[in-house]
Image 1 (tube, rainbow, N blue to C red):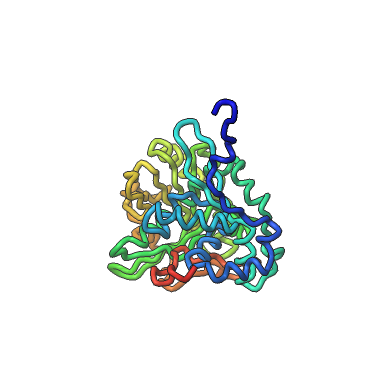
Image 2 (cartoon, rainbow, N blue to C red):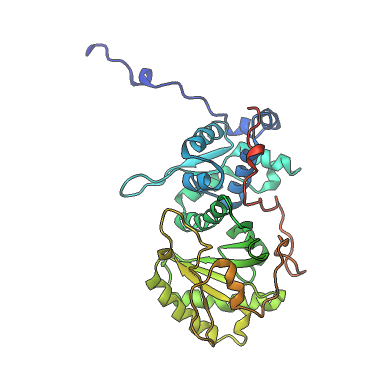
Amino acid sequence: MITNPTPQRSLRGHRPQRPSPRTAATSGYAATLAAHLTERDRWLTRMLYEHRVLTTHQIVEMAWPSARAANTRLLRLYQWRLIDRFQPFITHGSAPMHYLLDVAGAAVLAREDGLEPRELDYRHDRAIGIAYSLHLAHTVGTNGFFSALVARSRRPGATGRLAVWWSEGRCARHFGDIVRPDAYGIWQENFPTPSALEWFLEFDFGTERPDRLGRKLTAYAKLAQTTGIATPVLIWVPTTRREAAVRRALAAALASIDDPSLVPLATSSADFLNGQHDDPTAACWQPLDARGPRTGRLRLTELPSAWPYLPPLGTSYTDPTRTGSALPASGPPPPVPLPPDPSDRRRPG
């Protein structure tokens, strides 16, 4: 009735109470969660610790059969404070939910690795800061490149897989005194012949001048001289028009290096993807050799043929710090990019 309106709070459904940060960080609470967490849940916490933020779409294409199944489980993990979430503002429509590690997830991860939570160098206020960071779109874009590779690895009949995926933060801890790539990866192919390719990724949003990208090649050449390893650098840009401008700048920078073979380069753009089955392994990569003729587009696994002077990587190799110049970083090791097998996903809870 108008004289006795129903309070708004009475119209709300029951909302489960989330544990406080103090409760969620205790050993007792972590022990309670142990009986409810699947191997896939634990994999997700490690991925969020390593890569900071993943969208619903990226999580679904990497590890869940459908968005509905993923959202059901992600809600439960959010209620348990294993993960946190936010939704950025966009002018039109609505942005997907973005997920990050929460305090209970950090506590579980630390205990699994025999660490004290304080040794994990994790703070929730710092983790949630990605929601307001000017680098959010760049981080999400870089992670989207690799989540597409994970999805490609999980397709029926796939002949290759993403074996290693290092975040920008891990790359900075290992190589940051010389160069700071956006990510590092290794793709392994089993057919028609076993092969592998490692690379540093430079994910370009078209927000910086092409000559600034070119100046990074000097740092990559220095890294190759320091480690004795020439690692290919793949540059991903938003459009073919941007790619043409970037390639001109890169060619000029490469010509100024005493030994251009120290920096094997290839470029590609998002224009080569159809939007439904994004596949960075497709024939969309064009090597860049300032001294040689222009070559056609190659598949990711065909790129080593453009640099025959590079030694074969081997199909069982999974550690890029194979020289004494790269010191091991503290904290948890990098997670395996591919989620656990389906048989490992369903556990009581």
